[in-house]
Length: 268
Image (tube, rainbow, N blue to C red):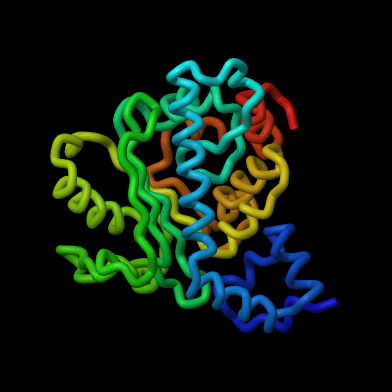
């Protein structure tokens, strides 16, 4: 059994015990194994392919629901359209996304490396009336990562590394990403913008959850890490926080999980 004392004084050290999946992995296999696997994720396409696959399937499923091609959509489980990590009943996808994010919104899922503190992946999705109408993915070697903030001069890949504050860094990311959105799709320039920023360890831990209840509880843990567990930072966060999501967070871990689960019919 490996001890937390083996971990160097990195940002990640405080958060390992919060994620039950990665904590068990670390206890059994140790820090060297974690580093090796992290390098494979950082330098490979695992997270990219997983996010792309889940989003593609979720969009195709949502389209079949809207076209009436699924006779019993309440029996088909998909993923939330943003971010594509939480299981949800396919007939509840559109309504849930509209309830949380509103009529017209751009949302970007940002994965940050919690060792180097650099931005690793971006998944952007534009939702109209709760349905995705445009999306794109950015990998670590994409030239978009070199885009600089007009005021601060930080590159997109290094904003969290420079600012060392997740909410402040996310707002600076939005400054850059909103400009990109307005250049690509100026007809959506008045749409609201949200970032969901997550550290790599938090993304891995949540993706390893096997049930919807566990996924929702893990989301609450990550967002509440600083406020409730008194950790140095949130493990992941929505910036700015959608008002409806903020209300749910204050129902507590159990209330948050049960409310989300009610959108899948309270079934496991």
